[in-house]
Length: 195
Length: 185
Image (cartoon, rainbow over all chains, first blue to last red; front, top):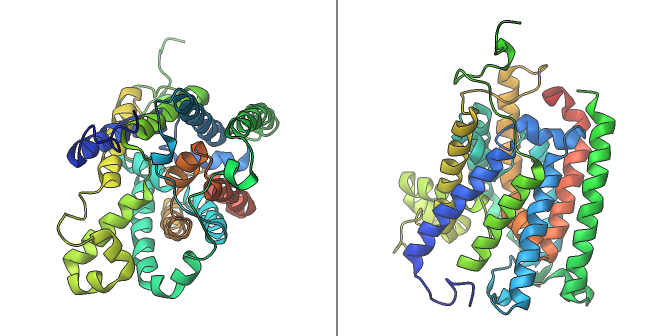
């Protein structure tokens, strides 16, 4: 029965080794997709290369179908997979700020790591900026923690909030993703010539 | 033409860089790694948490009293019985470095360079990278995770906050894209 770690198949030390192994896979596929380059990532926002959307949604759909089927087979207990608690307003504001930071800097934290590891100086400077920002955030945290912890909804999923069957939401996400992929390809054709 | 390789496509390694993978193929690979993380460890992938652990560790080295009295950093230092860098996401991010470097070396893409559009100076690009990193840190901490820990991981688990977050990342990005055009096009 999975998750194996939560069922005590192995201990903390092994989980750290697995963290490194899973990380290598994560980094490998990020770089394969071209996400070690800020130009490739920023292209998403100029519509001539929608790889960020395509890779992200393919990954989401793959993992979502995986947990869904494994759950139905009774091999994976989804309630034991950690879910980040929802705090709607801080997460909406955080998403906006992060999106701006993405276009200004060209990376997100994971891709900046892939970028600096492959020799990109801008990725290194970006990661340094994340460190500096974290330092400032830690200093101002006492003043903003009321906001950060507001709107708490706990660990909650879309099917629970909208009172819909899990399978229906999964099906809808797959349909939206497939429609999105077609739309993204059309958009690339329309804006691709500009480059 | 007598020459097999055109100088314009030569990279630092002395051979042309391979093209990137098809996005759907890379996405399936990424999704399977994420699924493996769910099945093996019961958690998803992440990145921003590793930065927090590293910053907490560094501040604790330089100014231990200050770090331990800071509520945010304290959360990453724990009770002092385990090293702050002995954290799941720190090990995972070290793996990301190794995996990305391996892929880039295979493809002939590992080289010292600055990624930028043709119109922006290197200094200005690096200043933007630094500023973007600061914004990213605030966004990720406010949202309790970044593109990996929230959008990717929470997206696959149909987490409510993750989907709201993901939508707003695109809204935020597209809303400033025009003003930042000079940096990329």
